[in-house]
Image (cartoon, rainbow, N blue to C red; front, top):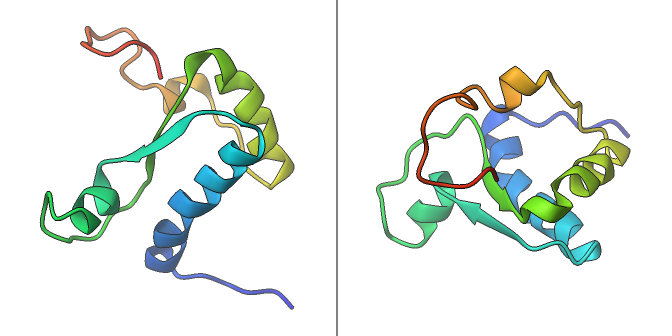
Length: 93
């Protein structure tokens, strides 16, 4: 059976899926922003087009490889990190 998800459904299911995959590897990860904040009552609920997950930097590449086993498509680094050359208050995550 091949199930097709609408973008809203897929976006809602991604945080628990990604956090479960991280947990399976004992990789520390945290869902931030978007629907996560709405569920915590920290912002109004509104549609999201993406999912924001912080992953421990030392295990990031390993985690990306694990995601690829589940069909994740690794895109160009410039797409993944469009502001890589911009000043930031956070370390790479």
